[in-house]
Every structure is written in C-alpha cells, then in structure tokens.
Image (cartoon, rainbow, N blue to C red; front, side, top):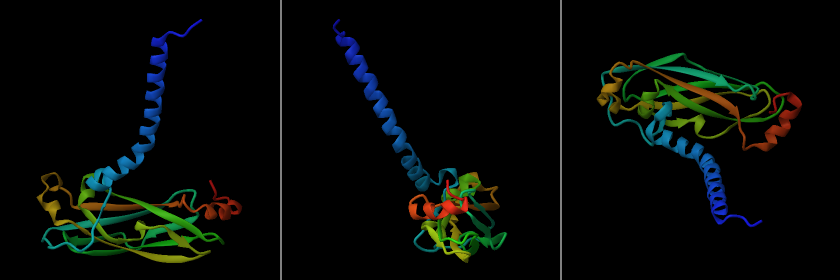
Length: 191
C-alpha cells in the first residue's frame, strides 16, 4: 500500500510545528528574562552605572527581605529591616549570609521588588547578586547592595501612591558549580 502524498505532507508539517514549538519553549525563558530586565516587568530591578543625577524632596521607604532555597544550606537575612531615603538618594544596605556546612558552597541570589510596577525605577549600582558567591565552611559574610530609586518615578502617575518598595532576594545553589553538588552529596543538601 502506498502512502498518500497529502498524508506525508501533513506529517511533515506537524513534525515541523512540533520541533518549532520545542525550540520556542527553550527560547522563552531567556527571552522573558531579557524582557523583564529591560522593562522592569515582574519587579525585576535595573542596573545603573552611576548614582542618580538629582535628589527629590519626596521620600520613599525601602524594606528588605532575604530567603534561602531549601537546597542551599545557608542562613541569609537583611542586616536592616528598612531604610527611608529621598528619591534619587543613594542607599547602602547589607545582607548577612552564612554557610552552615563544613564544605565550600556557591550560591547565587535572584531578586525582585514589590510593587512590581516600581521595578523599572529601582536601580542597583553594586550588588552581591550580580555574580555567584562562594562561602567557605562555616563562613559568615556581610554583603552590600548600593542602590537608588530613580527620580523618574515621581513622573509616573501610576506610582503616586507608592511610599514603600520591598527589595527581596532568594539565594539558590549555583547550578553552574557542579563541584559543589558533589561536595553537598554527603550533607543531604544535594538535589
């Protein structure tokens, strides 16, 4: 029995669509991450090369939150609960991290702000979250973040009611550090 040319053509189209959908699913995460970093969507903060060019009379309170993913045997917390600054003023906050094991472990922090609509105006000049962090056995460190709230926030009518922004971090075991995963195998912390 010979295959119908129309069935063969339909099969190729369906297979092509399936391959295209799989390829798009792999591209979706990096594309979404890039979109969020550019627009501040979902509370993703922005990176700044320098301090703000002006400071406003309006004040804003920045609250701090720190969490650790269950696969990372660290303690992590902000060293201050909040800071109140003028919009455009540069702030310096510290977070404390401690490795609770007898092995070196590398972690990386993800971050966001809430309300999410303020993400595009929250600018970080320096931050421990820009790179992975390796803590030695039992090591405790104080990690800084230098930031400001962009004065352009005052021009956004959708943010007139915003008086408090929460900056939150969650530390995760660094996926690109396979040697750490092997070292953790004996601690019960490996995935």
